[in-house]
Length: 170
Image 1 (cartoon, rainbow, N blue to C red):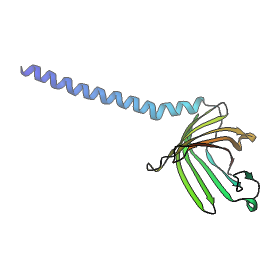
Image 2: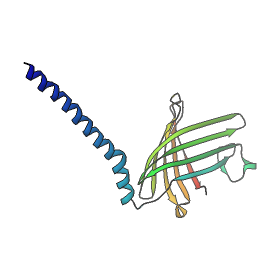
Image 3: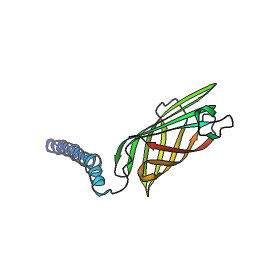
Image 4: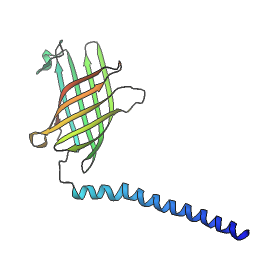
C-alpha cells in the first residue's frame, strides 16, 4: 500500500513536470522562434510607422480640397507599432469635428499584409464603446500612401463606409 502511494505521488509529480516542460516549449516556440522565423523568411512590405490624413467635407459631406470650404474635418492617424513579417499591430484614432459635433475614437489595430494589401481589424480601446471597424488598404506610391476603404459600425447599429487615404509621416 505504501509503495502504491509513493508511485502515485511520483506519477503526479512527473505529470506536472512534463506538463510544465511542454508548456514552456510551446510558449517559447510561439513567442520566440515563430516570430524570428517569420522575420527571416518574410520579404514583403514594411509598413511600420505613423500614417495620417485630414479630410475636409462640405455641408453635404462631399470631400473638398481646402479647409476654407469645409464644414467638418476628420483626422485619421494609423500608428503601426509592431510588424512581425506579415502581421501588424498598433493603434488607430479618428477625430471628427464640425460646428456642433465632436467625436473621437481610439482603436487597437490587428491585421495582416497580403499581396500589397493591408487587412486591418479595429477594436475599441474603451470596452464601453460599441463601435468597431475594418480597414482595407492598398499600398501605393512606392510605399508612401495607403488607399482604401474604412468600414465601421456606429452606435445605432448602422454600418458606414468611407474612402480613406493615409500618407506616411517621415
